[in-house]
Length: 195
Image (cartoon, rainbow, N blue to C red; front, side, top):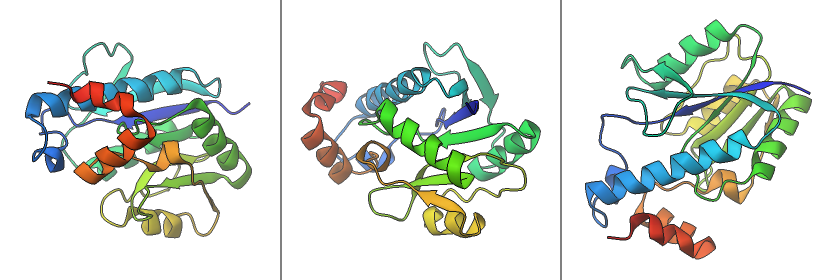
């Protein structure tokens, strides 16, 4: 079985989920962010193929006692490229924390597909962003998180990427519309932002 290192980028001192500011206070946005982060960590911890979970952030999230990769402020892609270069031949999974419907089977399918194809990408529900990317050999791969990252990651993979479409991997929460969509799938999410 392939042993994966999972990295979760997590915004620390910068304001979180600012596109939700019209419907939630800063405190509610923080609670939502931490609830999704904790869920993502728990799902990854339950996956046998994931040997280590690390958080890339400029803070240590509350209750996180695992590996912390200090964010030096160079931007997400530069930070990930630097970390991947130090990994050498270890398999790398980068997954965002704002996936409230994530399940172990989502991770299992993503990593299994990457094992067959050498890399796998999970786009967001709009098909433009990248919510997770798994690389059997991250050496030399350039990350392109940001606007239109999905197309750029596919191109960087030189047509070898398996594309994984699963609700738990595609449905992230960035906007009020995303939040409503997630709550239709799982109404209990509303408890995370209750006043």
